[in-house]
Amino acid sequence: DKQINIIDTPGHVDFTVEVERSLKVLDGAVIVLCAVGGVQPQSETVWRQADKYHVPRIAFVNKMDRTGANFLNVIQQMKERLAANPLPVEMPIGAEGNFKGVIDLINMKAIIYKGDEGDSGFDVTDIPEDLKAAASKYRHNLIEKLGEVDDEVADRYLQEKGIYPKELSAFIRKATIEGKIIPILCGTAAKNKGIQPLLDAIAEYLPSPLDIPPVNGTNPETDEPVERKAADDESFCGLIFKIKADPFVGKLSYLRIYSGTLKGSEYVYNSSKDRKERVGKLLRMHSDKQEIVDCGMAGDILAVVGLKDTVTGDTICDESSPIVLESIHFPDPVISMAIEPKTKADQEKLGMALNRLMEEDPTFRVNYNKETGQTIISGMGELHLEVIVDRMLREFKVGANV
Image (tube, rainbow, N blue to C red; front, top):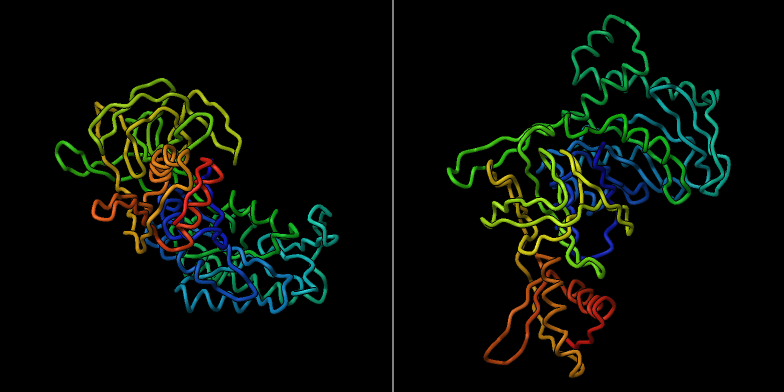
C-alpha cells in the first residue's frame, strides 16, 4: 500500500520536472546515491525537492563493488552537502572487489551473497568474528543517534534497558516518517546485492498514505482552505500529475487519488477548469503492462482513459465538494528552434504530433512566428528538443528538420 519512486541518474534532460512531478504525489521516496563519486548533483536535486514537499525518505548507497567505493565517505557527504541526519541500519562486508554482503544492524545478522551473478542467492548467518566488534559499535551508535530524536529510546538507553529488533524498527519508522532521520542501506544493484534488505526497509520504514498529514487545498468558490484525509469515505479528490500518449487508448492521464473513491464510467468535476469530464477506464500501470480496475481508492496511483480537457496539474473531484489542490510548477523554456517537416506527407502529421507531445510535456512549447512563417519549438535545452524530434520520428512517424 505504498507509493515508491526509485530515482537514479536521469535518462533525459527534463530531470528536475520529473522529480518534482514524482515527489509531489508520492508518500515516500527511495533516493539512490552513488558510492564511488559520493553525493551526485542529481541526488542534490532530488533532495531539495523532497525537502520542499516534506517527503520521508531512505537512502541506498549503490555500487559498493566499484573501485573507490567508500560507505563512510558518502555518509559524511550527506551530512555536509545535504544537511541530512543519516542513520546507517547496515554496514558493508568488504568494499570494491571484496564486497561480499551487508550486516543487518537491527537483527545483528550477516547477509552473505554467494557469487557475482544477480540470482546466485545469499545466506543469513552469524556476523564473522573479525567484524563483531565493528558491528557492535555501529549498533551502539545507531541506538545513541536514535535516542537524540526519540525520548523513549533515550530513556531506555540511559537506563540500559534492552530494545528488541521489532521495537527498534518501530522507533526507526516513526523517526523516518517525522523526517528526523534518514535510514542508510548499501549494496550493488547491478548484481542484486543488498536489494532484498532494501525492499524490506521500504516496507518497514516508509509511510503509507495514512501516516502522512491530510492534503490541503482551496475551495474554488470561496477561496477558503480545505483539508482532505486519506480515507475512502471522504469526498473524492485527486491530482493529474502526468499525461502520456498511448497508441492504443489515446490519452492516459496519471492520477493520484488523495481521498474518496473513483469508479470507471463516472462523471468527475475538473475544479481547475470548472468543467465536467467523464472517466472511461481506470488502469493500474505495471511498467508497459496495463491492468483494468473497477475502482480506485484513497492513496492509489492510476491512469485514467477518457479525460479530454484535463492537463498536468489539474485537480479532479466531486462536484458537490469542490477542491483545488496545489498545482505543479513548470519552469519556462530556455531555448527555441525552428522546425519544418521533411516531406509533404509529414506536413499534415506534424501539427498533431507536436500537440500530443505538448500535452505530455508542459515544459515543451510550440508557437507560430507570423513574421518568418516558421513553427517554433521551445524547451529546456538542446538535448530536450533533440529527444522530442527523435520521438516524433519513432512514435508518430513524422520526419522533421530543426
